[in-house]
Amino acid sequence: MESTKQNAPQPSMERSAYRFGSFVLNPARGTLSGLNGAEVPLRPKTFEVLRHLAEQAGRLVPRESLMREVWPDVFVTDDSISQCIAEIRRALGDEGARFLRTLPKRGYLLVAEPAHAEAPPPGAIAAPDDAAAWPPPPPELGRGGRARALALPDRPSLAVLPFQNMSGDPEQEYFADGMVEDITTALSRIRWLFVIARNSAFTYKGRAVDVRQVGRDLGVRYALEGSVRKAGGRVRITGQLVETETGRHIWADRFDGDLTDVFGLQDRVTESVAAAIEPSVQLAEIKRVRAKPTESLDAYDLYLRALPHVHATTRQGSERALALLRRAAAMDPNFALAKALAAFTQANRYEQGWIGPGEREEGIRLAREAVEGGHDDPTVLALAGRTFGFLAQDHEKTIAVAERALELNPNSAFVLGLAGWTCNYVAKPNEAKAYFRRAIRLSPLDPERAYCFAGLAYAQLMTGEYEEALAAGLRAVREKPSRATQHRTVIIALHFLGREEELTAATAAYREAVPEGARVFASRVSALYSDKNFAADVICALRAAGLPE
Image (cartoon, rainbow, N blue to C red; front, side):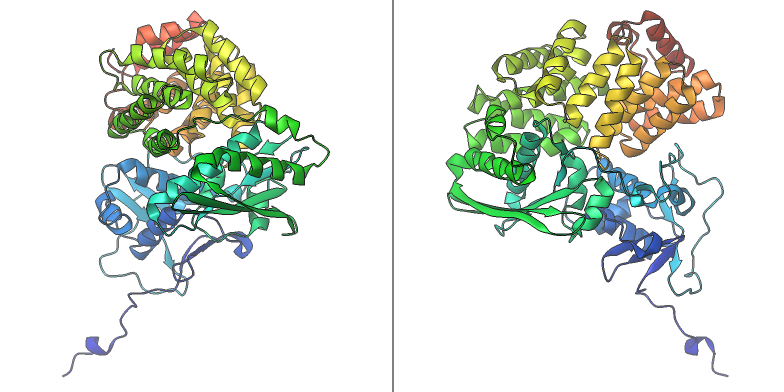
């Protein structure tokens, strides 16, 4: 008798869509849809990670498999995957905990089904009851996460979206990104503008987006779009300002020039945008706050190339960043921004337990040189302020730098974060909370905002709000698991809440994520915080968790 199995319908290897809860992933269209069919924006690599997990729904997917599928023939660190997973969790909101599981030291598992239900593939496994990751995903403020529209500020507000690189050369991608960062920074110095931070706007990079959705996601009235075409010694920058509520084009222009005058082009774009938003404001205000980081484009190129290595938060990345920044400073000794970023990198290495002999002294020296030659650049001041506060533990200098940076650029999320940490160091937790919350609002989708959540957690620990501190700390760990500071806030909060089992798990996660930095560092803690009672509590909690000195 002929077997009936060979006539049985076989499950399709290519499914048109996958459903998990109220979300539908459509690989063919390249979309993730949420409530009411609204598209949920994801970065291209994050979408590819989610697509691969959906194609292997019900199966354990090792991290190595994700690396091979999403980044073929490209070396990336585990942090690249962690950032994508964190973005997926933010996109899925409260539902994410039910469908996306982390199996520690093994990989990830997505519980999904085809949009038109089929039998599970052979060998598929159900998500185990104990597969939930540590730490558990933090609660989102609104149902469905960022699907809820943010209220518009009471001032003109805008987001500078990633510019398209029209040069046809992937190597020039950093140039287009750098132009957007410079324009964002220049606009955010203007007090009457509410400007979304660069990292939140860059979550739309590589995607065709509806500016109406951008306005709802980020809580802004205007969006600036544009492109950069670089050929030979010439560059063309085009831009258009769009009203997000209606999609109406308010302003459009293009700027041509020599690469030797690229900063002049940046200033002209900034002036035109400001004039389109509020013509009554005199252009002299923009001219007053101009700040060109260097007249040497080659040195500036090195600075731009160092940025992603700094933010990767890996030991290898920090070493690569320092090498690039030292070259930039040697090429242009007056390049204060490169020196400030190098000092900031050394402060990060100190936090992570990576700093080598003589590097602490180098970081402090570079921070001083940057401030002296920075011509009141608020970004330079903020980067140096982090170094003065954490690396030098000089509270007086940190306060002076933070106050000046705030005076120059009160709309910078990074400057506000520095102000928040400065308040933590000098025992002003309530002021710190206000600064951190404003920084998070200015940059609601920023993958680097985890450091502000960690700062908020420390401020809440100082005021005895342990549950709130735990929630903020968990969110910081989820968004940036490779940073030591985030883990420490969770451990301290759990210690004072008396939740021993969770404390044990959190301590193990800290040791695994940051092995060199999972220590008490008692002398550092004592020097950082002017509130010696709080410093003693922190040291006690870290010791109680079993961390080495």
